[in-house]
Length: 117
Image 1 (tube, rainbow, N blue to C red):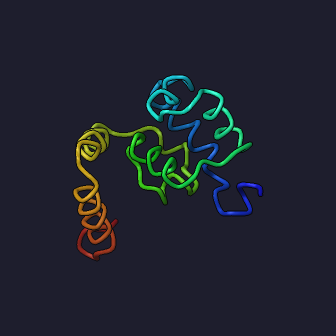
Image 2 (cartoon, one colour):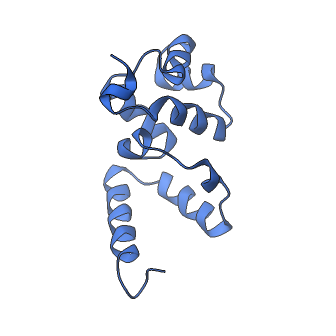
């Protein structure tokens, strides 16, 4: 089954982009994941799709949620201001519950008339 058929169409490109943003080689990511470099190459090419536990581990390593990993990431957003970089760095220090709380708080603020642009 093709990755696009099951809704993971952005996963291969996102894995590669997020890996490269961190300056990791395929081999380094493979070591962190406990898989072979060939597996990472196949994930990035869309030749194979990792099972959900591996997708969850990838998301955790990259500091994103599973839905973020599976959806389109706009590479033009890669230029971050200092305050955004600090926010991301602190977000990555949080456990899963802390990350959920931050995402919820940001969502509420972004959708309020008082704080949204």
